[in-house]
Amino acid sequence: MALNGSTIPQPPSPNPFPMKFCSACGNPVSLRTPAGDHLARHVCNACGVVHYQNPKLIVGCVPEHEGRILLCRRAIEPRLGFWTIPAGFMELGETTQEGARRESFEEAQAEVEIGSLLAVVHVLHADQVHVMFRAKLPQPQFGPSPESLEVALYSEDEIPWQDIAFRSVDFALRRYFDDRQRGVENHHLTALDYRRSGGVR
Amino acid sequence: MALNGSTIPQPPSPNPFPMKFCSACGNPVSLRTPAGDHLARHVCNACGVVHYQNPKLIVGCVPEHEGRILLCRRAIEPRLGFWTIPAGFMELGETTQEGARRESFEEAQAEVEIGSLLAVVHVLHADQVHVMFRAKLPQPQFGPSPESLEVALYSEDEIPWQDIAFRSVDFALRRYFDDRQRGVENHHLTALDYRRSGGVR
Image (cartoon, rainbow over all chains, first blue to last red; front, side, top):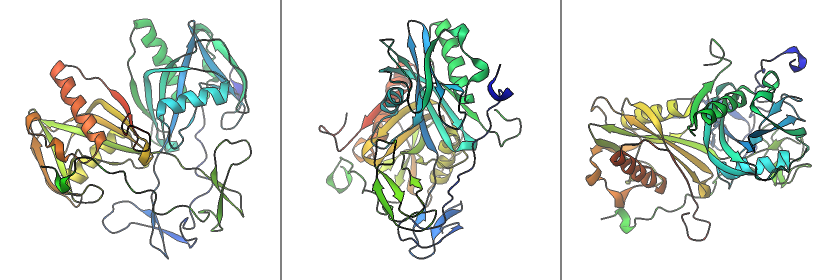
């Protein structure tokens, strides 16, 4: 049974800390369209700096050990208690593959070898792009972390589909198993948006 | 001959507007490692908000019309006067494909149809990830813009390789032609870093 009686992930909260002040000079900003631009931006009323906002990258992987997949049960919000793959915000100075590897170690104490590109999911309601890779977990060594209540290996028919934390992860896992069965390693692009009619597209 | 006598793109300037003040409350920030974190962040001394910085996505495409490729000569810095493919910062609320299509119209007045994923280039010295697609330009209609001095179609043997603006674009174009000759549409991941020894890796 699904945790909290729901299988549908809720959209995350909008930015809890909207930009009100210029990070360069500390004076108030206004939302307006700069000359030559076509979108409203946060512009400093004093120094004129334009503060652009852009989507953030989430990087992760599907680690496999002897046919089974490593999943983590989230110890933090959003989706505390639900299951996910190792994934998190990409840091400055790393590649997407390096980020996916780092997140596996931080969240699951797992030393993985990153493989081919599996999925790019545009999560439009969260202003995020999720980039997920296939990965190998050579040794069955892993464990919990401040971000994961528990970590475990699941065979395909054991995956807790009703308790997967995010639709992007559900998408990546289903494509992973489909491709594995067909003996291919394709990559898959899609978009999710709770704000557009129909929910997922 | 290469513009300015140089074929090697220079790394962009570091952030000209480093964060000094909290964008939520306007008070000064300090660079320190929050409890439970492993990297230094800009943290507000007054309200405690942590301001994370993450890589930005650049989205673009290689538009083809009857075998020739659409290139734009840059009207703005960096690399003013050099040639590039249509590409730019991904905006909130769009997919990478939608962003690549938008940039083609904004920079080259070109209505393109985005195709398969061509390249993901981690530009580590610029804190950017460049995502580039193949594209079709059904009609030979295009023109200059505030961002492009001129726009033109080039056959493979006419490409101004010495005057390509960015190494990520050089990489994408070479992979494009290699794959086209072999009749495949693969995707290619790489990383560039001026700060690591050896320059490109």
